[in-house]
Image (cartoon, rainbow, N blue to C red; front, side, top):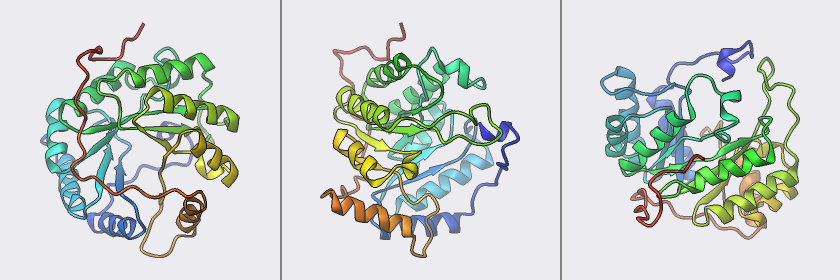
Length: 276
């Protein structure tokens, strides 16, 4: 929510499609199996020019042969269906923290709003990328509750990003201390146990970790990363460094699955997370 405070973050227009395509092509050439696109919007609405622009971009990116992941805020059933038809394989929508701590962090929409969007995306056939953020002033109980909710989705998320807060000047959390590495490792291990088939993604805050700390996270259960935030056609040393670490640890990139869909729900489990 940096845009709501004097944080030096300015609102930007939607990128031109030609620039997005260059980045997508460069991502594919560097070995990425999934291309993620995001916009810091409250949500998207069917029939708007902005939504039609997004659908057009998704159609072109999906032709490159990678999985396509987007995060656009809240979705209704109709918008979710159109995204799926355009070629989206995965929708990213984090719950951020526990239901109890959530009102202390987010005031623009409710925890239930987030659950509704995830349900709409799953019903449309998209797989779900859903995780949270550590370092928001939450307790250990909050972290466990967050994972409990995530594991309660039916079907469970295909991927679970674990983010560490990167404090931004001018925001209410600017003075928060970074997450202890061993706390991060513990949560990753618990995520692996609670959502055993998911890709546990080492996400925001990873650039602040040493290679040894990243290795601990992988050994604890992380098996995916986000990389190439500023990926261009020119060589990016950060990407080369990531690939070198992956090779040193003996890990191999997974092939993209363009037909990825939400798995079938388990009829023996509740249809929704049980918020007690």
